[in-house]
Image (cartoon, rainbow, N blue to C red; front, side):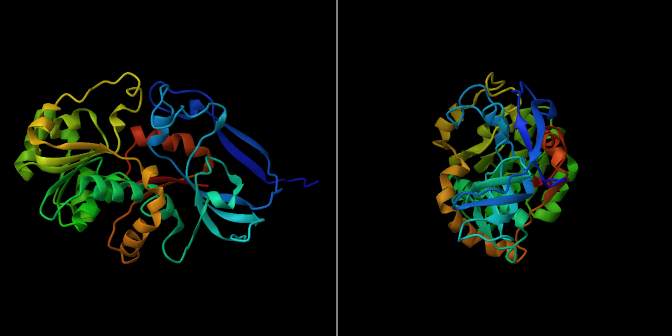
Length: 343
């Protein structure tokens, strides 16, 4: 018997949050790691684990885009990048890097078909959870399929310093659009202007009302052709009255409502009459709808990343024990780009 067995650690989701999610809703468990594999399975050791706003949606009491809420007493579902340490599959060997929805655990035993092999020579493996992963897929297809930006149009992005928003803004610039980013705090706005290269950036915290923010956006842009919404709430209230004819509004997220506002919403879409006046469209989008087109996105965005044409910032939190706090930071902390936990 091995006197010092490798431990298999897991974060188990135990209690449903009613507002901000935190460590009190999870339990960290440990047990000896089994190396037994069935035919076609691999054992993956985690290197990076993802925290994403959608996790809080899945903890809603009422059905969302999943048929049922995330089950209690189960490993928190999440993206993982890790290295294969044992394999009974011909397509993967020990040492290979892979990415998949393997959850908040230090190791994962899974069938080889549920992970995708990564090439660490093309880009850092962490990008498989960011610009070359789900956030990148969300940004690319949400903008190009629903937003359909044209050169010279005005694209406004809320949550513009986040993992998805910062990519949407840059993809819109690639299409020749003029882009205004909305973010929280002067530092984020300076980053959007000086590093990401947007045309305008506004700190929503500097405005006391939706009307003031709306006036500031109209003054700079003259109006909005495409609105990529990651936030919802009163920020969206500021946009609807200043949309142009045939505007396209993409609902990617409503993070302002996630911490208790999904089941009992604080705000409704109160300005839909402007959709009527401008014959505009609103479309929701989910990354899962474009999973089968992942290779298409990678063929386009991958070379941009390799050539250094896309800014992708990562906030890396170190330590498996920090996962619940890292998730909490999406709603309470000050970060830019993609938040990852390095195991």
